[in-house]
Image (tube, rainbow, N blue to C red; front, side):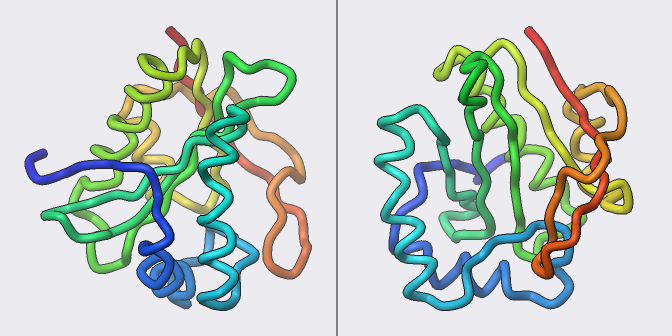
Length: 165
């Protein structure tokens, strides 16, 4: 898909990210950020996270406009495994952009970061995220019990999809 890019997240992305993540229709991706100052503080930590090989976070750009973000969190005990997560502005849902962005992040994970396995976890009711995983060739490995915490602290099950080299 043309006009798609990813780049490392920057502090200047904070207002766009906060607007996207605070959308009341955005119910499956939980972050503990409530204010613009909180989002900026979180984004300022990204270079340290990359330096420590903890996570590699990206901004999604479409026609040079910030439309979402995502990242690859590195497994601490198995640094050859990454967990991929992503979010997209509701205005762009249903256009295949998330599928394309996942492909770009996956290339970073396998080619640049040297991962041999990438996992995607999603709540079972998040059918759109499940479609993204399937379209990118990830295979469903099962259901994990009580692994995703929501804003109220309740635990939810998740499907795990994975792709290996």
